[in-house]
Amino acid sequence: MFRNSLSKLARPTLARAQLPRNVRGLKNINFGGTVETVHERADWPREKLLDYFKNDTLCVCGYGSQGYGQGLNLRDNGLKTIIGVRKNGSSWKAAIEDGWVPGENLFPIEEAIKKGTIIMNLLSDAAQSETWSSIKPLLTKGKTLYFSHGFSPVFNKLTHVEPPKDIDTIMVAPKGSGRSVRSLFKEGKGVNSSYAVWNDATGKAEEKTIALAMAIGSGYVYETTFQREVYSDLYGERGCLMGGIHGMFLAQYEVLRENGHTPSEAFNETVEESTQSLYPMVGKHGMDYMYDACSTTARRGALDWYPVFRDTLKPVFRKLYANIKSGAETKRSLEFNSRPDYREALEKELDTVRNMEIWKVGTEVRKLRPENN
Ligand SMILES: NC(=O)c1ccc[n+]([C@@H]2O[C@H](COP(=O)([O-])OP(=O)(O)OC[C@H]3O[C@@H](n4cnc5c(N)ncnc54)[C@H](OP(=O)(O)O)[C@@H]3O)[C@@H](O)[C@H]2O)c1
Image (cartoon, rainbow, N blue to C red; front, top):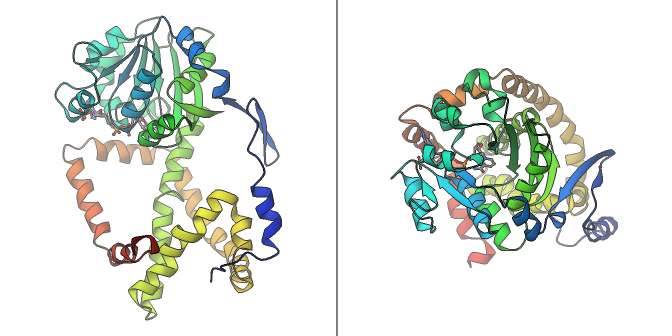
C-alpha cells in the first residue's frame, strides 16, 4: 500500500520537514503550545566544564551500558573520573579492556565512593537497592549523589534508597542506551537527556546537574522531576517502545495467519513494511508526512481505524499507568531482577520469543532485503 512517489499533498509537508533545525542558543521552545526550557551543550564548552569540575572526582559506580558510555565520555572530556565495580566481575574485566587501570582509576565500589566527590550510581536498579546499606554511610557531607533513573529514590518504600538530606541528589537520564551516549559523543553529537534535582542541599544542585549532563555527552537537556522521569520511562517501555508494540505486532500477525495468509505475507504486512518503510518516516518527518506518502485507500482506512485502536487501548494504558504509580511494576521488577537465577529465567522467556513463528519468519525475510542482495 506504500506509494513510491509522493503526492502533491505530500509536498508542503516535505518542505516543512526540510526547514533548518533549531538555532543553537534557543532556550524556550514551544512544544505544541507548551513552552519548555531546554538547555544546550553550546553553553558548556569543554574549558568551562574543566573549570567547573576542577576540584571534583567523578566516581562512576557500575560499568554496564551507562557506566561505559558516561564514564568514557567523562574521561575523554578530560575530567578526573574513576570507576567503581565489583572486583573481578564482568564489569571489572570490561573496564580494564577499555583502559581503566586497577588502583589508578578502577576500584572496588566502596573504595571508589570514598575517593569520589560526585557519586554516579549507575549500578543496575536492583543492585542500587541491594547495595544501598553499604553505600549510604559513605555518602558524607560535601559529596553529590547522582542517578540516571528516578527508580531508586522515587520507589524508596520498596528500594529503601533514601538519599541523605544534607547532600545534593540529582539525576541525568539519557534518552538512549549507553552505547548511543558513547557513539553520538564520538561523532561530535550529543544524546538528548532529561535532568532533575531530588535534593538541593547546596543551592547549586541544578547548575551542577546541567553541567554534568553536558559532561557525560548530552546535546539538549530537558527539565523533569525524578517522579515524572521514572513513571514515563517505565510506562513507555511497557507500552509503545517495547511491550505494547510487540503485543500489537503479534495480534495483527496471528489474525492474518488465522485467515490463511502465508507467514511471509503476514510478516511483511506487520513488521517489515512498518519498520523498514513507514516508521522511519514517522521518526524523521512526523505522522502526517507518513499519511501523505501513502495511497488514498490506505489513508482513508487508517484515519477511520486509529480512533478505534486508541479508544480500545486507552483502558489498558490507564491500567498500566496505575500499576506504575502504585509501585506494582517496581515490586515485580525488583523481585525478579534480584533472583539469583534472573539471567537464566530471562533467557528462557527470551527463547520463547525467539522461537515464535513471527520472529523466525523475520530472520528469513531480513535476508531478502534489497541491501542483502
Ligand atoms: N541501559 C539503558 O539504556 C539506560 C538508559 C537510561 C538510564 N539507565 C539507567 O542507568 C542505570 C544503569 O543501568 P545500565 O543499563 O547501565 O546497567 P545495568 O546493566 O542495569 O547494570 C550493570 C551494572 O550493575 C552491576 N551490578 C549488578 N548487580 C550488582 C550487585 N549485586 N552488586 C554490585 N554491582 C552489581 C554490574 O556489575 P557486574 O558486572 O559486576 O555484575 C554492572 O556494572 C540504571 O539506573 C538504569 O535504569 C539505563
